[in-house]
Every structure is written in C-alpha cells, then in structure tokens.
Length: 604
Image 1 (cartoon, rainbow, N blue to C red):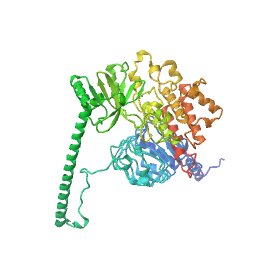
Image 2: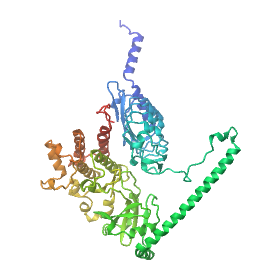
Image 3: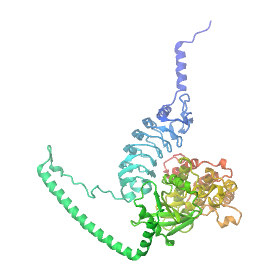
Image 4: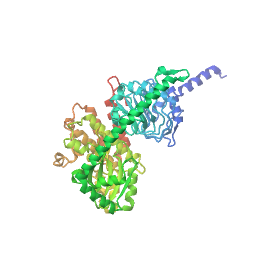
C-alpha cells in the first residue's frame, strides 16, 4: 500500500519552488519601469516575469553576490512613455542611461532615493517640467546630462551641492532666469547652458535685468499692517516711486541724446570713409531685383537689405579660408556680430530646382555639435551660405599650425573634441530623416568655439553641390587620407565610409599628425598603416603627440582600439556612429571623471 505524503509537506515544497522562481525586488521594480515605457519595437522583450534573474536582461547589469541592479543602459532603444517613480526603489543604482529615446513626462523626484547614482544620462528625449531640486541630494553624482529636452523653469541651486559633479550639460532646453552662481555650478562654462534663450548669469556672460532695467520697489516691511499697506507708507512709497521714475526718465533721456549724437558722428565718419562703396551698392540693389535672402530658424535680427549690403562689401581682406566648395569670408555686422559666409564656386551650385529645397532641410537641422546654417543668399554673381562664425577656426589649423598658445590641446581637450564630433556625426546618421552622410569628415571641417567645443561643418554640401551624374564624387566629396578604401574604389558614400573618416580623425587627435604626413608617405603608408606598424611593435610612446603629457597607456590603447574598429578595411565590420559614440562616452567620460574612492572598473 502506497504511503501518502502529508499535505503540509506538499505545500512547503510548492512554496519553496515558487520562491526559487520569484523575481527579486529589483526585478519587480524593473517590470514597473517597463510598464511605464511604451516599447513598441519590443526592445525589452527579454524583461520577463518568468525569468527570475534580471541581471541577464537587456541593458541591465548587477552587482554580485547580492544581485542588486547597478546599471540600466537603454540608449537608442526607441522607447516612449514616461520614467516611473518606481526608479527610486533601486537603491543601489549607479548609472541610468536613457538618452536618445522619445520619453516624455517629468523627471521623477523619487530619483533622489537612488543614493548611489553616479551617472544620469537623459539627453535627447521630450522630458517636460523642471529639474527636481531633489537631484541635489545625489551626493555621488558625477555626470548629469539633461540636454536636448523640453525642460523649463529655473535651474535649482541645489545642483551646486553636487561636489563630485564633473560633467554637466543642460543645453538646448527652455530654462530661464539666472544661473545660480553657487557651489559647483559656478565652475561650469557656457557650453553647459547654451541653447536656453531665457537664461542669464555669469557662466554665459549675459546680464540679468528686470523689464524696466532697474529693480522693482517694494514697501518697507514695517509699513504693512493687518489691513494692508498703511496710508503713510503708501504716500511715502508713491513719492519715492514717482521720484525714481522721474529720475530714471531723466537719465534715460540724457543717455538717449548721447547715443544719438554718437550715432550721428559715426554716420558722418562712415560716409567719409565708405561713401563711394555705399552709393555703388545702393545703386546695384536698386537695379537688381533678383537678389534674394532666405533665413532659417528666424533668428537673424537684420533686414534682408542690411545683410545683402554687408555681403556686397566683402573683399579679399575678409577671406578666412577656402575649400573644395568655395571661399569663406568673415562678415561683421554693424552691431559687431560675426558670421561666416561661404561663397559657392561657379559650377558647383547643383541643379537650381533642387538647390533651395535641399538647403531648407539643412537649415532646419540644429545640434550643439553642428555648425548652424543661418541663411542662404542668392546674388547675380554668386550663391552664398551664411553660418555662425566660430572664433578659433578649424581643428586642422588649431592642431597643426600653431594655434595653441592660449589654450593648448592637451589630452582632455582632444578627447572633448573627439566626443563632440562623434555626437554631431551620430546625430546626422541616426537622428535626421533621411539620414545625412557627410562624405568629407576631416579636421578642417571640425570648427572650434572659444571653449574648444567642436562643431561639424559642411554636412550635406557634398551631396547637394555635386552632380551625381557627373561621376566625380570621389574627387570633390572627400579628402585624400580620410577616404575609406571602398569609397575610393566605387565612389559610393555610406555611413560606414563616414565612420572610417572619423577613425582617421581620432588617430589625428592622438598623434598630432595629419593623415598625409610626409613621414608616412615616404614609407608608402597612410596614418592607418603607420599606426598598425607601431602598435604591432608595441611602440606606443612614439604614437602620442609629444604635446600631450601624462597620458595613461590604458587611455591611449582604448582610443586606438576604437580607431582600429572604425578604420577596418571591411565596412561591414565597422561599428555604427551610435556605437562609436557609446564606446567613446564609456572610455572618455567614465574613467576621466571617476574619483579615487570609486571602483575604477565601474561602467558609469
């Protein structure tokens, strides 16, 4: 006769089995996050309740042996939806990377409970509302990137408490008011705040003023009673305000007269010096009805006639460079604002019926690491493109022609340039629709602003200004030394040929040598072959530019590894620019910004 197993033993076994396959508490939180996301592309299909180990889920890494979630890395996943407040339950979370998605809603204040958080990447989403002041409680935070969102309001001064913060990017949002000049906030330059038109303060060198240009007058606290403002206080305040207004108006009137006198003198002087040119220019404009100006973004505060008049005064003294597509001039407006004007060589205008339509697309593109196309001007003698003027010029001149006296290109500056250039190129490849292949990535097309922030220029021009039927793409669109092997063979430009050119740019930054350095050519090599020779012989000390000192061998090897992947002879084995950007962020930002008490192997 079979012996029956007591019911309580069966219940205990069942209970133990369920516990063995139950999600961890952090796994439950991840499922709550997934429910708040809209994962229409099923990028998080591995996040399942039936899998009790969340440490193997896409984008999730854990610490051992406690299996607590340490990192959530989900950039470029096409996620929409919101960030669940449940994120605050992940107390051991150190890295949260949700950049380049389509998330909306607000940044949950509950994130303050992630007390070990070191890196927060939320850029390039559609996040709204303000920055939660509670972020100032994340004392270990080292990287904070909230750029390219729809965030607004003031910047909370609590961010100044983040003494470990080494990278801050709040650019391209709708923040307003004064940037708090407190704590660590006072250490960041204008590049952390650009693209917020209503911001003011010391970091961006923009004065904060009231609507009338002087402070508002408030009644003295002692004048206020339980019934409101006392009659005496009201009378005194009224007299005070009237006096202040009369005094201000008198001051403004005197200032206005002085300004008018100054302008009158300037006009007389200008007429004496440039009268001939102005008369000639006015006559030409009056006779020529074909002159046309188109501006993009609506942010050129000048009339068409003002811009065209200034353009027609440009001559050889204003030339700042020339390239495959034409000559570049520096245009200085009457208010001393400067712009770059690229004159398109005759024969390179492309088909007229498509030219302006394509330019409109290029003019709609905005990114912190792309040169801003402001407008297009058509004159009888030329077609001209108007860009923002970048004061330091090209990376090529700055790196190779002795432009480093004031701001030397040390290793960190070069890595900043590499990272910003990668962001700009990745934006063209992956965030523009249709994708834009640059075709001519090189150091002379990377322009630098006064903070050494890089801006990729001439994007889209190769396709726009080259007649595809003429079969001259490889001659015009591209520069020897930067061109991928397959591009040289068949003349077909792809994203992967841009990646190759970017890999060459990385090598140029590391070595300080042009890709066509005579020392390579004498040996029948290019910079890629030269690097392969030296690395094969373990001669790293001969690779790094001697102007860079105290560079860690591991950092050099990491950059050379990325460059080697980019310059692989097989385009199918090269990474995408999104992948290149991710590798650079991991190798450049995290190690450089870690502190001695951080785990040096931690991927923040």
